[in-house]
Length: 430
Ligand SMILES: Nc1ncnc2c1ncn2[C@@H]1O[C@H](COP(=O)(O)OP(=O)(O)OP(=O)(O)O)[C@@H](O)[C@H]1O
Ligand SMILES: [Mg+2]
Image (tube, rainbow, N blue to C red; front, top):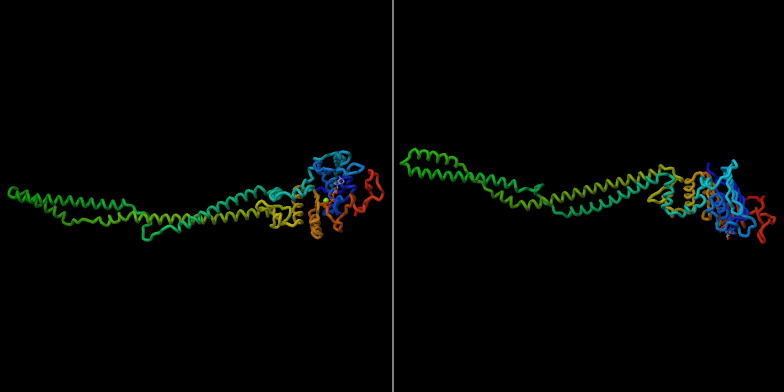
């Protein structure tokens, strides 16, 4: 059960002469009144009493008061908090009558509940971080955002390169009617060598024929001397003639032509290959761009779901780009009333044990918005003590000249010389 303020008594603190109040357990208790009457002094006194000496007003004791400041607050958990005496020393008494101190108060009093402007004036990032801290997904969300940014940068760079490559590939030359791969000269040279080898063999045979024919001539010349040799020579010649009969030389002209054209053909083949490679690379980059787009979409969806599944202090709150959003609107696009509601809801969640919040200067809310805000506070089981420059019906009490209007004592009190009358118990709260 969160702790609320049950009763409140303040005397001689800043502008306050004597104020005694029982705030509503839930919803708004509005301290109305004209300027300078002591409304904010009431909140300052509460802060000082429960928040510790760091909240002590600069000039805490009311000027000209006959007695020292006195504050007494009873809390719904049974604690009685008092500041009184010359040094306004803190006294905290628990329900069992034991003495306690500031440390116990600090365990359930929320600093931001006493000082909401600290949250209202925080940077966008600090507000968003506070919300993420409450819902416990801050680390995950930061990682997701970093990953999304990394993928986005990567996709951007790849998209630029892909565009450049596409343009580059489109401008490269391309050729029809050439082989897909470069032609090598070695194969043609081998064919040429084979032909040359055969031709050399033919040449050898031709020479052999010549030798034989020479031998025939010689043999004919020596016919007389060697019929046998003639016959043999004739026989050899016949054989040689037979071998040489079908011999025919092949031409290398075709191959020589091909060899001479190799460089030109290969230049075209290389052009085609380079163009195909550039197009392939551009296609690959385009596909990667699409993949990264899908990844970025996934991570954005995951981020939305993470916040969607979180236990938010107020429906409609979210965080994007490190900024707190309410119904998709950034802080500077929320109305003053929305800002107060968002701040109150977040502050409440930070320290759920603290069941109250102090709100100064509620003038910015019109009466209907104020009523809506009050209903929302009630539904949240939250107590708010607020000030407002107004003497209208929306105010719970009117502060006038340091008193609650209607509770100003009739009889002059024992006061310092030339001081206005001091508060006597027995006033009637409005
Ligand atoms: N120690 C003090 N003794 C007497 N008066 C003081 C003291 N400290 C401040 N004041 C006076 O109290 C007045 C401000 O009081 P407070 O801020 O509580 O008024 P308020 O009702 O909230 O006014 P506003 O509507 O303008 O916010 C100022 O006139 C200031 O001079
Ligand atoms: Mg004020």
